[in-house]
Length: 232
Image (cartoon, rainbow, N blue to C red):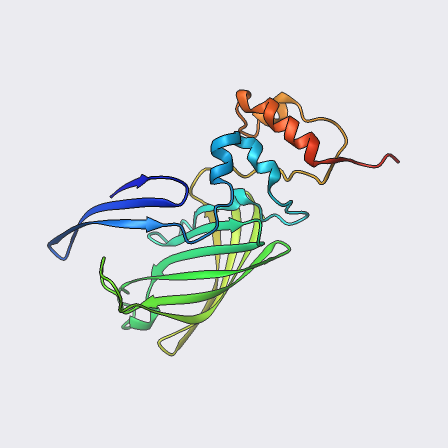
């Protein structure tokens, strides 16, 4: 598969796959569903664009928590997570296997679920939807139905816990999954406080992944948008 991005809101996916001995190929035009949280601003400002995002406060959920997550003991399944700071929401896509079609201890066909919900402290409390009835790269026929809940607790930039309660094809399933990050945590940094006691230093932000040529712009915006902590 090849992905080509036209801008922050449009792309296309060109694919060629072999499924059950049959070769399928095509081109899918894509448009963004979730808001453009920082893409356009990043193109103009670099890392300085991050300072204009709403503060996560005391929550561990920040934009850098987005990415791919899994439990290494459960190969072939995991989560893609996106954080929406402006609306304080999390979107997750869960790639797993369909417990509703199991037969004894035999294999289960692939299944994926979409989930969305609000951030409450260090927890993202999501409603889970099942997409079913569709066909590969064909229009129509897909049904989206609520099947349960998913609670993801952010522990730090590289660890989380997912607790789920689903009803799929009339069968209740629940459990807890320890999650580790698959993608790098470069975008997940220590939370920026609402007030500052000292100006950020070049070395402190370089250690968190900020490039040198973006530092001065970041500090300028940081100083404007942050207030000094009161003296005691």
